[in-house]
Length: 165
Image (cartoon, rainbow, N blue to C red):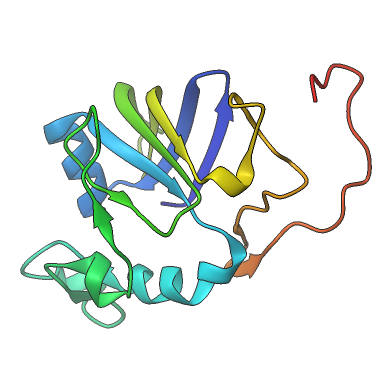
């Protein structure tokens, strides 16, 4: 996955056209958006080197390898989802079960697809929940992947006048 952003209960995902994950989304039309914390970056990096495609496509052979159980090979734990087929990752503090609304290719000559998913169920570790219905932005710091580098968030600088908490 190259990118993700959310607005309301919709999440937009950017995936490469040749990705096994895109084929899975077209086939099953469900996913879990697992949002890791910065402490998980090394496990995410191990996970990133795997593909579920067997045999591995020629264009991927030099840097990726097939792994049937990508979660356990990365040191992560699969947990059954409540409302969608794909598993959640237990170690990720935020797990968003979702259904595909739309898949759009980005045009001729490009190699990316834009996937719109709708949130079905949200799971959050207690340590990042505020008032049973909000994410505590003081305690929650998602892992940020920025131009092939991993980051966490820095200190809060302020909040918008529209913030509820």
